[in-house]
Image 1 (cartoon, rainbow, N blue to C red):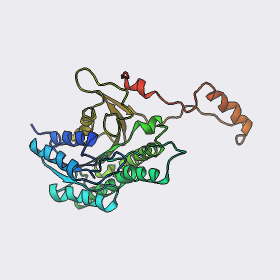
Image 2: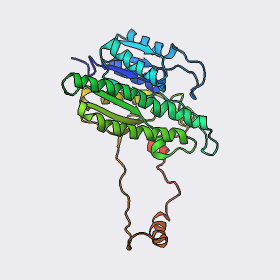
Image 3: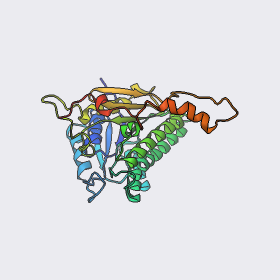
Image 4: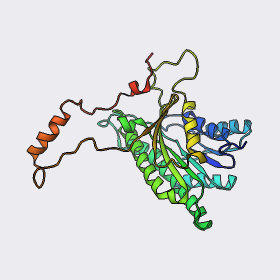
Length: 313
């Protein structure tokens, strides 16, 4: 029996470690030929010398298991290098079918202490990096559709957002903003590319990686069995969203961790107030809105620890 992704090719960015590595291995297990992209800098803040080793090691691991894989060590936040990444998939595998955007860095700081470079660098890698690869993949699929007389082609995009965007993260204004932007990019792309047969979805994963080692430091490892925060819990959803079975899933945001997938609704109107005059006055807004928020803690968000369902060590 054919594997779900047999005959398809994929690009996974940031695939040398953590989530990206687990996702690349899962796509290969499901039959895809994979371009493993990783810039290879050792620091989670993007610091250090770039290295080919992480991408090469994962590509070698896939080949050792009987799959097809090549490594790419470019910086996806660089427009030209993102072009070369997509071109590598096309030249080596004949076409690109699946794009998984995962590359990212952290430069955490409270908003009143954050430097311009700390803001710009995180937006550049996360948001611009997602745009760059999406741009060239989308152009590839559009050209393939035109060459086929307007017929739909096969294309899947899986982007990586975060609950830092959904719930807020006090020390990560740059990261939260970038992840929110990725959701906007995803829904816009989903609408633009649907006519070509391409879907675009975003995930908010929770996983214990070098990027989140501080966030989840208090959540103890289980005495036995798979860590609820292992990246391997996230990878199957990425494999599904990349597969033909997910043709009807488009423009969606899904939270995934520890054997759980939650579909996030688009924002809904919580309450509505209409002015009794031609337009609102200050006094009228005060009378309507102040009581509405009177019993709510400022900046109320859901409690991530409670949703996670884990106990701290």
